Image (cartoon, rainbow over all chains, first blue to last red):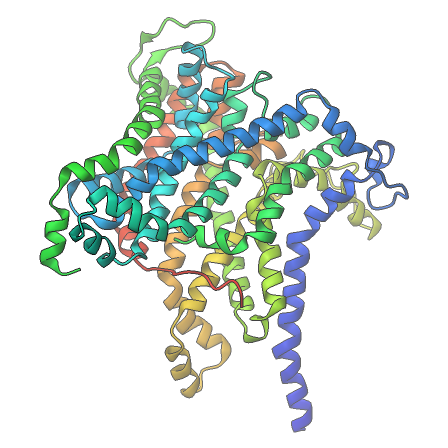
Length: 273
Length: 309
């Protein structure tokens, strides 16, 4: 009786969570696995991903040879890197402001980034499209850099504040007493302490820009092609080339996979509330 | 810091201005200026065929809010999408976080599980959309393949509004449940052990502990996460664009897709701007209403997340 009860208890305590976890892992991985399987099927068999017998790497070669593809990968990397670095440079001080000061200036900045974050992207990308047309910078790096930097500024300032909150204030007080000056105390004493947080933010910001689609769709065309738009075009414009879409998508996923595998600790830090 | 020294430290407005200026100038030029321009365009006549920029007052807004497609399809779709997807993400994320915080999963298996589950959040949303569109492709997708192999019927996923919407929501839930999972997991790990111990001594079972101790303690984090995600869900674009782009017949259009279509497919920049500004206005208003709640609850620090077991 007791043996049976404890057996059911163990079953309930360990087996059910185990099964639930397995189901969850399957749910979150199967779509990605299916995409990779599709990428490895020859075009003639792409409609029989689950049944076919042939495997090939040709899709990757062919996708890479698609017009604009190498340029798009390079452009997306450039935009992601440039917007992240630029936004970091200006949000490090503004995050420091949020963390270290009280008063009207600090509070109005806090309210501003909070409210700006609530505005849907389309509400300013749409007029931005008309503005960049007028400025004759449509489909250039500059045009697509603008919204990326803006989004990063609100997001980075927010999170950066948390990183500076973690650095004790006595440090820069002591440094100021030692004649460091406010900027000196901030840049030489506090900033180095916040570097791990900045790495986290940089990784997240970079992945955001790499993955971004709406800005790219509206502000760029074939002079400055970007990865996300090109990936979608295999299905939406040039027909139903699922095998090439899958191969490109697999490549475009690579930064995320690498980041999750090797920099998970940083990513999770950057996701803090 | 002692209050006196803090006051002295705060004294220098010049330094604060220097800290703020670069970020503020860029934000003004890159985001706030376009918003102002958008407001102006929404009050003008401005289509590709009639770029006269004549002032028309609120006529564009009147046309939007009296458009049946807007108030009868787009708005219900958007609200339904927000409510259902965020509701499911919160529920599943909380369940997963609870599951992963079991002592048995503090080791290697737990680390691997959390790593794998983080992936959907990090890959481009466009790819998630394309992936689900491909899986649910009626003729060649994996889902229909498996359904038919199991003796089920042929299902045409994207010719019916509700089925198409179900696929969109599934993709959205797949992509964003990890967000809730990771933040709630961190909050769970940061909880003090005493309330649960006291509950256990009082003879509460696992469900009672979860319902009456864990959930109330996690409530602040849940509210903040839900608010952030609701604003994200309101402007959802990539997933819907890649899976249905509003089809069939515009019946799965959500707010951002609607404004995009007016401006870039119908080439009515004025109407598109008006739709976008109406949405911005509503979400700003909601943002203002939420501000106090958000401010009070977001001071709750989640703290660094213990990833390595």
